[in-house]
Image 1 (spheres, rainbow, N blue to C red):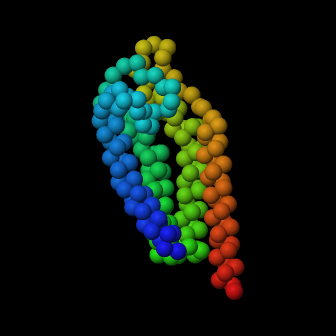
Image 2 (image 1 turned 45 degrees about the vertical axis):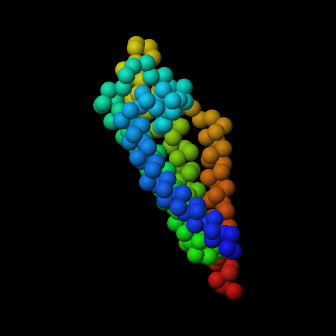
Image 3 (image 1 turned 180 degrees about the vertical axis):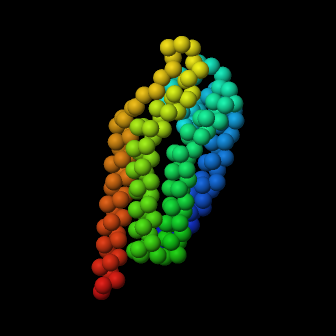
Length: 174
């Protein structure tokens, strides 16, 4: 049990740190996207999107607003995981609260896995490429194997949370 508590404390710290650092990183990205692109980093911009012009401040603001939705989902996942590992750190493993946090993580992953390729990515592509030269503005839906993998993992996490919840109910009855 001490290994679980020690590792849970580390993971809790990591997820709380990500909860704080991730939005700061996104703000830095939209303040200076060209600096990130020079390093090969394209946060929030779908792979293969060609930006053939310098992004104006209004385009950066629009890009930030569009990327805010998946960022909020990611932050919510980090928060739920931090709370889950805080419970594990306290030795609370098979309790209703842990299964509920796990369930929230699963549903947030599912929402993100569906929302990103079907809605967010096309909007982001349009916002970022609207001022490209003629014929180079586009928006497309791309549901690939990576997205299907994310959705599958999300469904597995939801199922595991339901199994844990049932286990908690059976344990409480005895």
